[in-house]
Amino acid sequence: MRKGVHIYTEQEIEQASGTEKERGQWWNEKAKEMCENPQCDMLRGEAINQRLYKEWKIHKAEKMAEEEMQTREATEAILEECPNLQGLVDRKSKSKQGKHGHETSSVWSWQCKLQEEARTRSRS
Image (cartoon, rainbow, N blue to C red; front, side, top):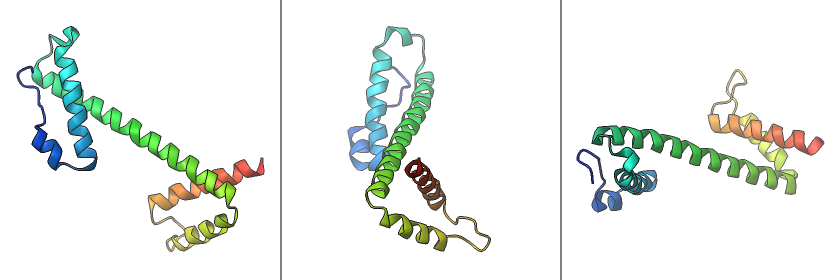
């Protein structure tokens, strides 16, 4: 491994959980690839660390976007199969609104948008 390139120890990865565990594994794999890549020979350790940091942020954002899309599709499918749930979701959504009719949670805001999309699709 190139001098200055951060590598997570097996112990750090084992002790981590969730996203941090995944990040350690991903980071080590990508760091090894970059250090073995002749195109990266001119990069110093800190430059590789910075590039990995940026690439991890992009990887994580892409993964979150994919999970959000899967959740949205699953929710839409459930609402289409069980139209009775739409009323329950609508009532729950209204009860979560604050004094001025604003959503009190970004999750509820997202759900309202999702519900509206599902309603629009079902009407067309």
